[in-house]
View 1 (cartoon, helix red, strand yellow):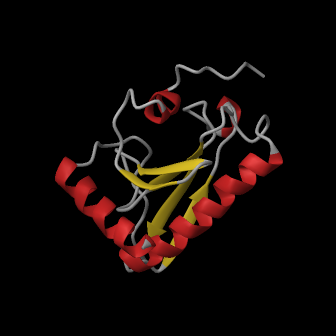
View 2 (cartoon, one colour):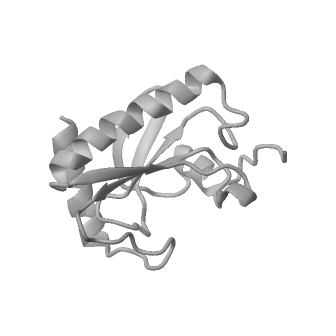
Length: 140
């Protein structure tokens, strides 16, 4: 397996080199909105520890990611009046991973509404700001 690349986009977000629509942060994880969401409120949860994917993260660091994803999922159900939640986590190119910093996708779902294709469109800034506000309020 290739080594972790500290120049990946999520590492740059963690260092403040790239902006994000942050909805949650603690000492171990950062959660922010996907700028190309597959559903309104699509959130990414990443560890602050450098980990390419589930194959090289420590169990304790992964547990922090899982707990944060659980918390985001509960808040997203409320904030987006969702009927369900889809959680996805991909590992290595053959497993569908595109950005090589471990991340979990948390996507609010509504009955009868399909997910958009991955990376199919960039969301409007105002919509992302409004969705971040809704999710932050639901997390409070």
